[in-house]
Length: 557
Image (cartoon, rainbow, N blue to C red; front, side, top):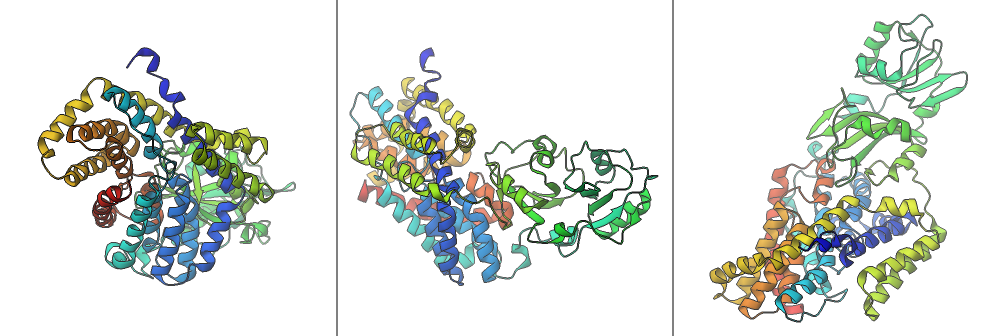
């Protein structure tokens, strides 16, 4: 790769388009469009497992045609939890079909997923290297294929869901964090205790006290100035104040006796016992977010948002002690105490998905038509003009900023910069695979192996390769590496290189076997899933995907 092209990925059409799609999706959510759709699903979802699954899956799949699939899944995660609670269905029987539908929805349009956004750019560079002409695909070119795949996925769970999915309705194993109530006593109040002036805890900081008694959390402090919820760890305790403690009865009793605290006949924390104002909440760490891999103490949730983390559900285990140095993983669930207005602030952080129903920040409903109009104008420009995809979508972003649907800071936070840097770094790698002759060399090996077989066998081989690469590398990595290879194979067997490239870009969404895809990682802990559950249901979905993809591409592309 020439030196002046090493960083060309940052200015590529595909990378700019991905950024624009993220911002447009965030705007639709911010003005309440997504919330309205979710409310509609709650109303018409019904009570039977098949109807709920089909309704939720179809809706999420269609939304994923224009919004990142991880965003669509994150939006509907709390919705599915409320549906499960209302209908008595096990959440484990609803989340996986919803997640698979979100991934399948990434095949519906050319802006639905990173691989499809990259496709035209990769085909263009391959055409130059092979000295051939390849017509770029239009926005809705993959739509018929995507619809067939989405319907097939919904049908799979409608027909075989009882065999493929874990647990049954009412099975305690399907509940989210089944031991939270036992550990923290969801039906009990925060314990008020009096801190005498002669107690050894006086002048100690909240952080020091909690580190020495890790089973007890100081949720609030009350003095003559009022109630302070989630006091900062550096705040020193003064004699004569009231402490609001959270923990098990045994832990709090031992804490009170050990430090000579007094029982209280009055309770200044009444408002914190009112479920309309505060309570326990469950918050999922969003895969691919800035919180993944960081220690809990580095996130400063107590200082930034005024919430107290009581436990972490991580790798099928509830951890309640020594939380601060623990590193968070994708899909981990934080159990925390929070006033609802502060939880709304945390809900706006793109690193987290709040599962607990609360009073969210009111949407900017007066800006709704600006957001919808910006997306509509962008799509219309893509369909009716020769304007580049990135430019058309960025014009929509400009409309959002000028109409103040989003502030510049909100637009910045809406972008997953890890994804942007991954895309920008992989694009030169794809060029290197083509220009060094690596793609042609591997393609000749593939042709020698399957070149004499029927064309559909060659296509199936390419689709299987893309599926395997997606699981091992990533969907974007698989697309960058295999589109040049597929185009070379197509030229070698006398087929359409654009069609073979499309097979790769769509098959890059065939990521159901393992919880490595961001959507699967997001749903693993809330759904109580194990790797074996993904292997069982994912194998069936993978086979159906491959069986449907090849004939659908030949029929519609």
